[in-house]
Amino acid sequence: MANPFCHKHRVTYAECTVGNHVYHSRYLDLLEAARGEFIRSFGPTVLHWQENDMIFPIIEARLHYKFPARYDDLLAIEVRVTAIEKVRLNFGHRILNQDGKLILEAETFHVCTGVDEKPKRLPEELAEKLKSLLIQ
Image (cartoon, rainbow, N blue to C red):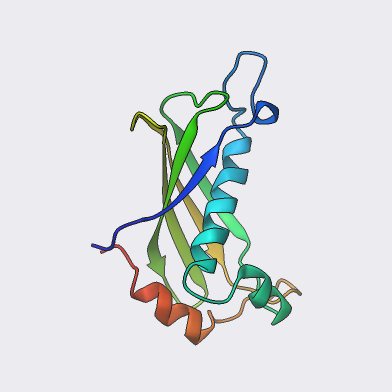
């Protein structure tokens, strides 16, 4: 099993509610940032694919909130490839705080499309790199 990619993020005040926990929808932003850095870590960026008429919109997301993240926490956002198909791509995510406490588990399900939002096969170059990182 490949080790997950890990992106670090310090929780900002703007991400928190008055009750000092990260607002639930902000986790989707954190996952997006981590996936972008994951793709950047082994090749062309998400922007590169977009400029070449390929985008990867989310068609489903599942988030399981386990424990609140709070202002100034240092989060480790793990990203794993969990499935690759002709036009589909799935990721598993975990967020842990600086004490190793599990904050969130999530799955995101993506489809490869052109900018016109019509389905396209995953680019072979990207698919091959991702297959080598696939969690079995």
